[in-house]
Amino acid sequence: MFVPLFKSIMGISERREREKEEMKELILKTANKLFAEHGFDKVSMRNIADAIEYSPTTIYLYFKDKNELFYALHLEGFRMLAYEFRPLLEVKDPMERMYQMGLRYIRFAIENPDYYQLMFLVKDPLCTTETDETWEAGHNAHAFLEQVVIECQEQGYLQGITMRAAALMIWSFVHGLVSLQICDRMKLYQEVEREQYITDAYEAFQLMIRNFKSVEK
Image (cartoon, rainbow, N blue to C red):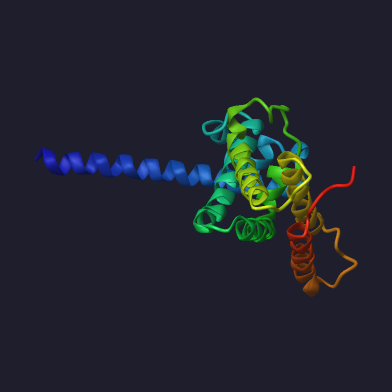
């Protein structure tokens, strides 16, 4: 008689846990959408609660404040980006790995503009980017790029420039491309052509990188 009761209790517990995860996911998804549409500073916890038709008290059961929501979304975004990069570990040629990394970065940004804005276009509300462990995922992503640059330099590419400067140059270029698209700054091009122009510009940049020999002093 205890086995059915135990199974029933376990079933209730598992259902409640699943419901908690679903609620947390709903809060994060809604907050991400509102932050992207209205700006982080203009969205309150009450706005988020109203959007999901719950009381603000419910939101506070999952997140202590808006900043914690921000960091949760930031971390999730970098987890998604890391998933995009994971297959590149199997690419042996570092120049090819760098090329594919850029393509995947562009695809991630264009397919997930709300996440990308919070990861790279919205100021850290507490200015803890350099010290808070919450940002470790971001540092890891950049470290992956730096390692690729090191391997490229070992093969004779990107000579005459420091590893850090090369990594920043590459990241800045790709970030600039996708930011123009996400921030709706490419209206001078027809909408159907914009993503193709981004790809073409990236291809041209890669050609420059492969022929990069030195920096004039």
